[in-house]
Length: 457
Picture 1: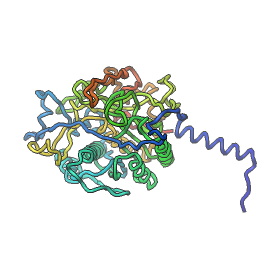
Picture 2 (picture 1 turned 60 degrees about the vertical axis):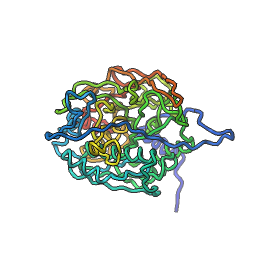
Picture 3 (picture 1 turned 30 degrees about the vertical axis):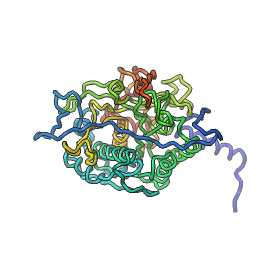
């Protein structure tokens, strides 16, 4: 027999529930905005395009170093060992924290034809354990077509994402979840599948688009999926973009001043880009600045303020802007100083083998996913939605122990549209503390990870 709660008890219960949700998710609201629509007012579907920057890395010498790891090289690169050293990940790995018992979910579109062979080559070359990789396509994927440049770009993205999540958390399980296309609805479908089926502890999304190009109905549905992820203590990460303060227009022909979605959702931890300067062979950290290689045509770390979401409460101490600011944190994303990955089907690698140097926040999101897998292992439980903890640390006297504070550079954009016109969009400058070019900065992992657990409440 059901009994109704007294009105006062029901009110107190609802109030307590609201407080729990506020503490867990933060306080924010939606800001009215305009979206791309046709003459009848219907939204025009827009594919999410990825275009990883890369170049042929050649082959390693007898000592195991690649030409781009030479002091004489004009374009630098890092292998996993140097990356692990620069960001103080190596001490954690040495302690046995390698992601055991934790699962990283990678969301991408289409497929990578040679994902398993290339991952095995990557692991063997850099003396990493064999990867524990599962690949699922809940809605199916089309057959591989090497002449489809869009599919090839996504396949390359997949290889980069999987290899560099593995480089940071070598013993974590990786579940690659493939969408049948790069349409928003299809990416949302597989993200919902991953969350509903609780496939992993942390989800990495190395893609994004201008907020105005995303269907408002899909964004609302996506936000509900993200709320379900937060309730399940699943950490959500997304790249903040590779065009600095700009994003491509919905037709891909031009650039506009915009933040990137899904990174701009307040339940997502947005990962920006830096240019790391470290010893090419030992990995010893030297310096870091905001990633901006737009003068060379290679992009810049995404950042800015949302026109969809209001400023969440966790940003009240660092921003006076109306909208949610991105990124929250960063990691190396420059092409000059990029990361090595094996992608054997790329034609540029035929003479030098499968090895390429990659740049972009496409790499920094899965790298951070690996870090969160280590953090979950250290804590003995999922850390879930990270932003409250990150901003507590950033606003405390432990900030400079936890992060490399990026105080030089900016993410202004200069590039050419499809008509050959030069487009310049002002960006945001790095400064002490949080900024919309690099967030709180890059990780000092050995110090940061214990603090994440301490501040996870």
